[in-house]
Image 1 (cartoon, rainbow, N blue to C red):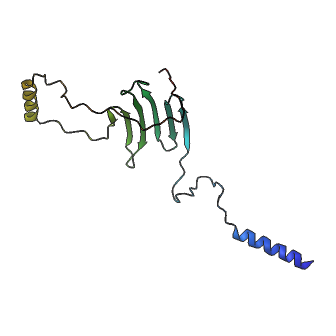
Image 2: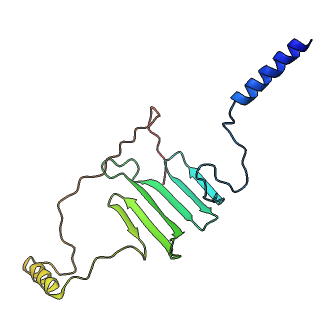
Image 3: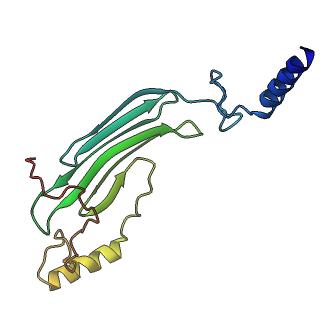
Length: 171
């Protein structure tokens, strides 16, 4: 009687001591992934994906971060002029206490971001500005016209549909 009970206790002890706890329980605000850092709670979150490829998402956190974006396919079904458009913004507080806000758009013309903290180009020196105006006059353009750049190649997406036939959605 004593031997089977002793074997059972030994087996239980070996199994209990050998099995590490891979999934520790949540312990309030302690961060198990980055010790010494607090867990930042997510206060709100939304995420919407539509069959036509358009989407929107947003979230805000307990430390003041806010992110939002939406996107869609522009000129759907028109070969050579389709473009993916994404616009959004994000904001947070810098370590020095400065509020940072960035708004952006990404489309067939590239990525453009705006924010009060982003650097801006210096003003064009007066002598160079006069030279540009003289060149524009010599070419028969007014100085307010934009220069003519070579034709850019249209954007081509690498997206391949998982469906066998195309779907047409109205915008």
